[in-house]
View (tube, rainbow, N blue to C red):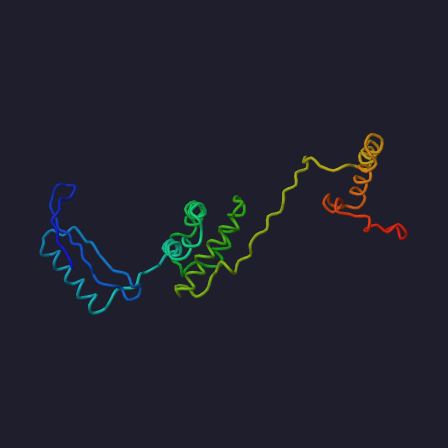
Length: 229
């Protein structure tokens, strides 16, 4: 079923358009509609509509072409990811894609993205962004989906080495631990001014390297006075 209408363009001139129901796509099971406009005459609009209907009748619906990473991302988002997460998570994920991932990969053909390119981008992310591992994983998820729908043979992002950031140590950084003399002074103050239990606890922590939780979990059965263990 189709309708051809006359309408007025922004410049004041008239043109024709059509809305048409094309049938059910057997691949997706969804009804297909189309709208085309800008025809100078009703006859041209009718001619284009007839050609389109004949082409579908003879050759069926064309498969949706997904060429770029950005297009694959949109398809992955709508087909997979959007059904798995909460709205708040979806918003944050979209922000990562819009701000970082799509600027790096969006315009590239999905089948032309290389291992070298993936490695270079992740290396750059790691220098400035704390969530670079998360963005690497999201990018890999989109490429995995491309492999699943046979738009890509394998996932280049899975073949890179994820950089590990070394903590920068500044020479003027405050060293937060006691010297031998400071520890001796601290234990003496505890011994002289607090109960013996506190002295025993802090001495145990200082000389064994126990964590606080490990020390507080000790019971008398854990101590062997004969073997001094």
